Image 1 (cartoon, rainbow, N blue to C red):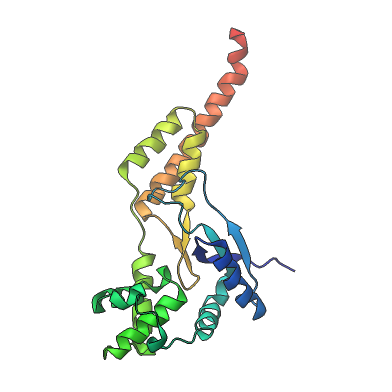
Image 2 (image 1 turned 90 degrees about the horizontal axis):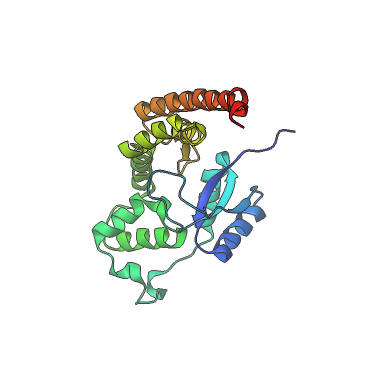
Length: 222
């Protein structure tokens, strides 16, 4: 039986919170996997930080089911919320932005923001939420632009031996990101991915030349 491929569903800064969510999903029959992927250094080109590095992975086809399950676990009454809770100080525009970017927030805050907006007479119907989700997906699916300096560094590394250039080129060429609905898309623009592909093959060529040189010419100088 083929092993199920898991995708990152949520990221957490707190391990206990991650375990709690994983337990809820596992109880409902969803395959889960927790991984601490805090990098020793940033291997992307977008200024990644060390926040939210506990990753909860589930099958991509279960993303919608998992989101619905987590929301169904919540029962929020505005009148019972601590009056000092920070969301109560959010403006209407800030609450709308939170719902638009609900993938960046926990289920509790999303549901509370929705209830607060509804209490103000704002449209937070399922249809409106779906509209925001589609808008967000379109925004997140847009490919990113690689800083020009990384292209220069990648090619430079190719000519200085190849190995690091191969790594950078492959990363630019093949790196993907997972959207909130579980869909995977390439991270970088087509133009940048073409540069990454060229970098990858150039790096391999230079690495082969350097290796052959060391094997055939190098011993003559020993």
